Length: 206
Image (cartoon, rainbow, N blue to C red; front, top):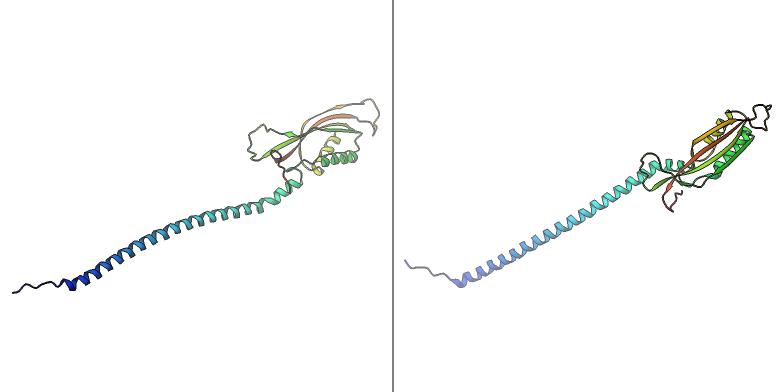
């Protein structure tokens, strides 16, 4: 039986087409892999930016919720004279009004300069300071109840927050007849007025 001869002229064309197809397929596969990696990288970058924007949006939303929740209380404390600058004129006006209402024979006062107050216990104030101003009172009273009446008027009318740090009283004119123009008791008191404000030159304002 005769051995058949391969016609390379016929196969050459088919092999060339096959190699070209193989090359194109390889290029297409490489291009698709590159495109997939590029798209994957872009997806990760976009997703990371989306998560970052989402976190910022949620943070802003949370801050807005906190402001809406706490601002009325902040505004009330500011108007009452506890937050922000001290309301000395309100203190003195309330003191004068109380003296006239109770008809104190004598009332003298002195308000010292404001200073930073250091609490006896540890407290984290953040960006704020507690400030204190000392008021020294010298009072001529007709009876002990005048002092309580004066402090009650300050509690209800004066803007701000205070505490009585010291108070002492001595009876005078014991042998004299009762006189609305002459005190029966002389009292000396020290009041400390407190305010909360930002540290340094910055000040709270509405």
